[in-house]
Image (tube, rainbow, N blue to C red; front, side, top):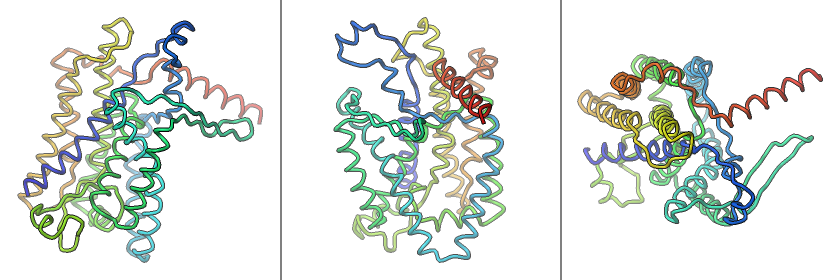
Length: 368
């Protein structure tokens, strides 16, 4: 069983680490025309212009537990009154479609790591409807090849429902969600984790809803690992018959993950300020390190309690306090509590874009 818990912990910390590092964006440095000609590259701004970052605000944090509860109850009722076979078929199709995009992105991260450099985009695709841009995509030949590989993986999952491929898809969803879903401040992060602390306790300890949905929901929204790794190997690595699995929901990875990523960006913000606003790649990461280690300790505690009491545990009961307390202690020790609560994660470029977008929307409403 120790192998099982270690396996689940590794599957949880990989996307949090990778997602946190990918969420860090260097401040834009405008190149002169001569520099562009010399390097043959576009400005760094154009490389990131296609990324649609979702900012998670204080209002979103307030609504999230209620939206999550409504979705959970809906799934529970659907499983209770409808044929599970057809429902899981629809879910499989849906997650396979969105899985292609997530897998392609994850594979591109892996390719960049192996190549040791960023993949340069060769093509640009823009979809415009009534003079309004609805899709903007930049890609290369490498991305096309990776997308084909992603399609093969998702089709294989749809046909086999293999737990290893399910975990690969789960990794892809987590790794791509953490950099895209950014908390706008520590106030928002603390409120979100605190609200979900009570949300998790209620739905796991006081109702059968969470456990029922988790067990019946046949989709890559949870990490799986055999309870007895040796029995699984003996039975055959491709079989799942008679094999019991331990699971960890992706929500217990992605939700704390976006908070850990916020800590990483706060560390980067400090480093950039000390570097005169210039880009910096190597810098101390006290907030990220303390929060990341605390997450691991919280996960170990969750599994220990689950093993001792033989009952499903609301992971956020342990993970939420671990992440919140670690960041607050780190700030208190460094004398930066006031700065931590005042921190706004929105960059100057994002602020300008948001203000321009709000201005355009206001003008459209006035015309109507």
